[in-house]
Length: 410
Image 1 (spheres, one colour):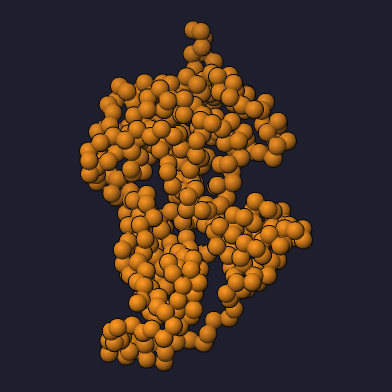
Image 2: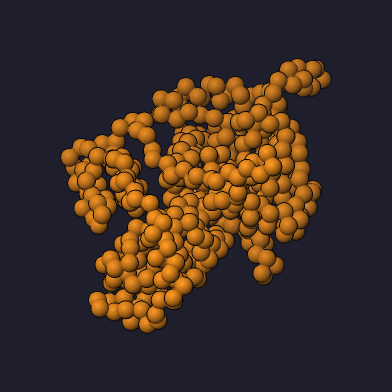
């Protein structure tokens, strides 16, 4: 009996995805867990494995189509098995028309685009293997885990700074009455949908304040040279992550999700900090898992790695899931203040801004200090302004007294 494979619920509020590329075609024999299709969600481009071995009887959505969770995308059957319903006449006619209009077959993919699953790519990163020079033993030249291990044993290592193949989505810009009309597609459309949902359903409030980070600037300069010896470019963001974790431990309502169905505040036991990353396709938010258990240097290293993987769209889905609180560093592009939008089901997001030379009063005297603006958007169903202000004060206290943070550095 044929197995109907439905687009699975991968969690984190994902309701739909876009078919990027089919890795099989109708009539192909597939093995259990063999990659079938690349699907773009609001988190990443992921490969979906076959739920069973057999022959591909029918592929339903085409590349570029959007599918909902629970929708049948492919049918797999045993040898000699066929679908139990005839192909509709209009579909036959449509295929004939497409065949007549179809352009010449595309040229093979250029060398350098390795065909491998996310798990295989992760293994290659761990073993230092450059997938571009590995020959795949799987179907259609797909690189399998054993190919990576064999390459590692032959010392085929990755080249530092090797280019990463990035799938760029071509958006059809339309001219109308002298205006350019750019359709929302892919990640940009998903961001628009999520942000519209957030503003429509979450009664948010925003608190703003300043932090005198003069001492933090000095300490960061001092520690930067040490971190560079470990291959880490130390920015201010890891310090901010640690300060936020300390504040979240004292005010755990902000390290939470809101369950709308049950009308419950769900306090999270782990401190998984999402970091907003600007990519060519739009904002992504990779997650620093268990940030309370990591040093400032470790967090700096992980932020750099996850940011690069996000921009290249090679990040694993699990590295984008499970966030409990978000930090967006708008100051990296020069903003003085901003009002960030909450990333549901989280209940709070902190914006950090450009550090400026500003007159400040210290011990009754006016001095020039390094001042950074901070904004906190929070779900007013979960907490009130007083508690939000106390949380911000705790974060600011640790940013203004960074020696407290250095106690956790290694």
